[in-house]
Image (cartoon, rainbow, N blue to C red):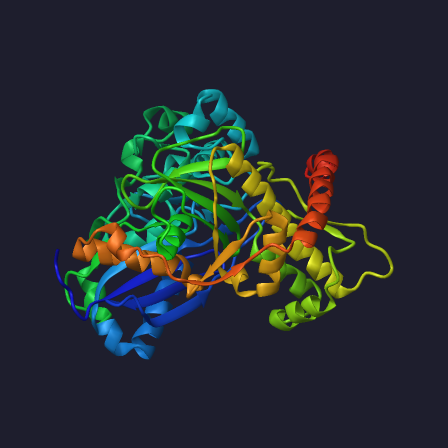
Length: 500
């Protein structure tokens, strides 16, 4: 094993709302960090897009900030790891210029194309680890073939969001197994592109990146960037991983049965597995992990902590922490109002891009804090649906950790533990997230250390136990939450039909 005393490793996480960057030293301390906001374009109902060029500008801005704020650590940089939002369709021409804005993970336009893909590959749920859903890459390619044929005809390269940054950083056209698993083009058990799924999507293997395991080197930083950024030659860029997998790496979830809930912009409930275990029809994503020989089962929720941000904006409140504190002070038990948090549709368990957000049970005595509490509870009920789907898929979450921005609010964690009916572990520095996991993969790519020696689990800071009386009350509310979606589902479909 190579020794790299004094080395620093960077993790760049290309999220939906921001690009986050961290510098991590050999003791796994964060010695520099930066965050650059990103905007999402929604030109039509169900559409969600971003310009890849803006991702690159955000990365350059983050690098400038790291160099300015942490010059000594930056000068010791030896490896870069990449994490990012999964499923986005980035299509480039022969000159590596984006042909159009990237179609993101929370885009719901490709519903008909999902049916077409399933007809062409009826066993897609077992092969790709999940049923065909509009947010994934393959249905978007079929949509482009049908609706933008001139663009489709010019596609030379298809890639995922973080891999566009890799191309700009290194000139290499590559991806990792965990992000590739989110394309509906991968044979997840074999960890190889599926000829059958490629044919169904109308693309060739030459148009797709080469596949690597997350800790493998994918290339080195381009010489002109190294000079411009004040770095030595040979800085390694690791394959990295999708944001869910890198979140797992960051929290140390790399062994069978280890589980966590991530409450970021979206939310994920992840359980690590030692084999590929799909369950078509349950909305569970059975994907490759970002480390060799591991997979995970994941319930993916399109609406996480972003729902709390939405209600704060809707109420005209800029200080979300103060609003949360007011809500906690006013708390007396389950809210009178039930909130369906499907502001961007939903994946697990509904696979319904047309689902909408709904407040049910409003009356004249409802206050702003009642609405906030209902939003927090609605997201928690969605996580409970996710947990039920995972259990049906044979996973045992045990004592899940909670990470992401939502985990910082202890009141929300109290509600979540009661709704889930199980204790939750909050870990020291558990909010480090996917960027930290990407930095760990960068270290592995440089040093060749064992995964378990680097990807340690942070110590438990506290365990949130479910309050028995509150848990009983929420069980009844959860039944009504589920019933409400069932009743309203036909209305969601009709509401999304174009006006005549």
